Length: 367
Image (cartoon, rainbow, N blue to C red; front, top):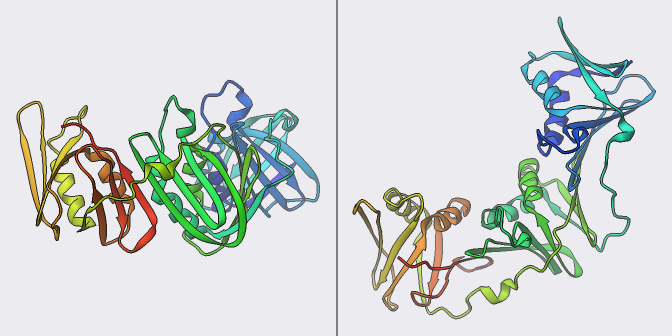
């Protein structure tokens, strides 16, 4: 029975959308598969890891019957990528999915569709909001790099999303630095806070495009759903209490200066060359009129960079993990940034001049 007949690239597109979350090794073998469901011309592709589920649709089904099966996601994707452009068909016969293109033919084992575990979707959502894909993707880009990776404090391995009135806020921290970004949204919503897992955030960054088409975000008690284009992404939320980020952001640092982002980035990159893999510390000496960046390593090698700044505050001698500074500079697409400092033991605050929508806090380190 023929399920699909279309151009290779038409089939590759939805497969690439859903295959990103499929792990190669699973305790449940069927989770290495994706669920293909055909109802007439409508074909849906679904993948899940039981925490996150992605569905996308296309209209290249053949015949009017209804069929569902599951097949190894990576194998099907690898086969299609290796094929030359042209017409491709998928046929289901005797529990095997046959991929045909030109004189090539591949027969893949399938598993029954009714054995495929799908995420139970919430029926009630507390907030439903619409934002342009481009704007939300930028919001994620401003904070994602500060998420923890495998922290024992599991609630840090994700991003806090806060809806409050006409504001949508994103916050991420690994305990050493914190990134905050906000944007205005249409409508007014009761305050709601949810922690979205790291894997979901990275998948959204991969799938969202820099276009003005709308993304619909539905937030439930234990789940969040993102709908855009032909894609529906459902994710479980991380349970736990996220740190009070408002308390972490310094409010009254009096030592402030403006500096060019690219100029600072290049100086830090050069100073970072002489830091060691284990110790990524750089020393920053801020004095009226200049910023000195210094680094040393176990071989007694030294680097020093000097930058002129319009600054008349106190002299501050402070150390930072250079990676934390380079991360934020790589993700900010601005010309100038503002740095606010207290003393050598206080966190530094990096902001965008005359803009309250972004704040980055980085803790000092002993040098």
